[in-house]
Length: 316
Image: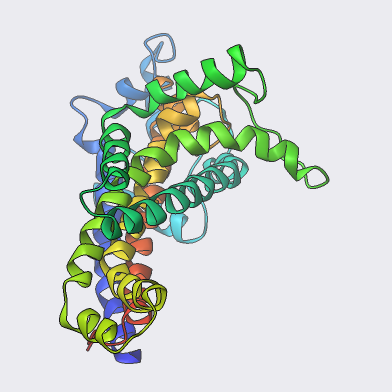
């Protein structure tokens, strides 16, 4: 196990280096002069201003020096300064990141609480009304765009039945129920599609495990059905489900861009929209790098969790 973890870390390092090169290269892949992309003609009123901006952003240096200068800053927590906000990017991201993490975790909890029971029931009650209902939900969950689902939820629970706030976010340690009210609608919106995918995966894996010899043997020996399903079958079925959970957790972070915009949630996702519309390239670059690193890191930990989910798996 330790050798496997060390091997995965050694593989992770070049992947992160490639990710950093890609994120750095975004500016230089843009057609034309990067300065023209980031600033309007009014900001570039003369040649001296352009030269000063190039020097300030380090664009007057050879590209390899630019990369190592930028990478050195990233490794020390310096992601540059935002052109739009005129503040350090790291400061802006740290302010909004907790709200995004809260929303992502809440959406994942919602999806797991819905998907695992639905998938298990659908597998146990195969080809019954319960199975058909669960799979219909899964189909709808995958088909409905999350921004449209968010609008429907706002209309239902904020306008027609005004019991939940339609936008914003207020973190309160003294009143967690109030905080929860702001989280419910965006978490359901973000988690529904993931729940649908997880439910289908859970059903498929459960059906495969139920048909195996060890399940028939356990039932023949008189082992309680609940023990067979939850202690043996579900645990073995969780291996590919864990993989999907890891991938979906990382994807949820990306999905917050739309959901946070719909619900005016003050997180990193809405910051991406602001940065893109404001042509704030340094901020877009920093956000892209952070999302990419999170995606790679989450998948690293998912690989490690394989062994916990099923000790029979050989990781060496």
